[in-house]
Length: 516
Ligand code: PHE
Ligand code: NA
Image (cartoon, rainbow, N blue to C red; front, side):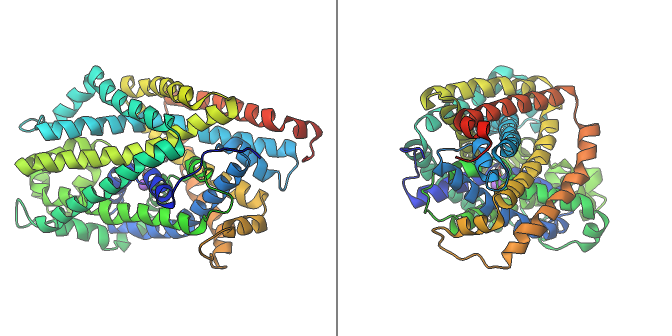
């Protein structure tokens, strides 16, 4: 066992860091998008099912796995999953489980960051543009494409964000990450609550026919008919959103949990992470973009669509939602608010920046830990190596159109795949009894026994459905060659790295193929 590994200094710091990890652009941009595109209230039913049967159990699995790896000085998936698999299979077999898990985690972190960091950079830029009213009185769509076309500017805001990340992570877990999130996360919740309060009193700002209430009704009345007609698609979208929003299937919950002490609680803390994220998603995230877009429909929906009626207009908004929505349609809403729109817009984008930043820290730390623990590169140096890696991985996002969306589609798929490995390795190969014991080691709560069959049988089945359902279309149609090559390349690097790191540390027992 390795000594003097960094640990979280305070419980509140740990919980805020985990909440910061989970609460991200997913809560405020991706969630409203998914709701809007999947029939509003129709989406919420499978969403809560996925939360309860998949999100919560997999969150526990990742906390358990992370704390376990941390005991042996590991914060990355390769060595951690090797050690867990070794409980059931011989070292040489376990090696492959470690290699594949480590490969999936490494490639995900790099691929996701190739665009996630750009989205955060856009938010920083747009916070500034809102405060100064830069897009006021202009076509916001054109403004956005001009912004994207100005590569120097895009790279500037990307650079500011990534350098701040490198500084925060370079300071370490307890002295860096924990301090930064202790400031950013409370601010994030305060900003969001202020804005939601404003949305609630807003009512019908433009036209008495269009109120924020229509938006709330759209999300909160279960639309059974839509659900019945689009069951598979909606189920898939809901599962994908649960993984994305809870930061599951990535390796970064494990990474943060690896900085726990061996007797620190994971059961209640894991549940607290889920609760804080869901509050920020369903309550706060759900009360911003969709109700706002609905109340300002007369300003953002074309007149000929408006004339067709409310449902058509809502459907139009739903289709328009997407990654770019926050940067093209919502600015129109802020413009319509008048002067207060500058403040509101600046706050909205700053909120996105905080949300994205505190998630990006976790991924940044994963790669830094990988360099530090697996390859002996000092943290202070490693953070800059990561920066260069991110820079290169982000180039196709700037220069190849369509790349971002393709990689994003793939990332959602691979998250689900890695979550399946979580269950196989950290529960089945680690042995369910060991898992249950670990979960309750130092725990502040007892997980009810009926959660066992959920973990063992229901969760993996629920996972397989979307995996099988989406694999074919993704691989066959969605991905073009630049995205494919990037994915394959990251797999190779990730596999080689994991193989090397396990071999280096456990070479002797692999040689003998016996645990020593
Ligand atoms: N959970 C983050 C969000 O909601 C996104 C994320 C996913 C971050 C996976 C890291 C890893 O935005
Ligand atoms: Na989230």
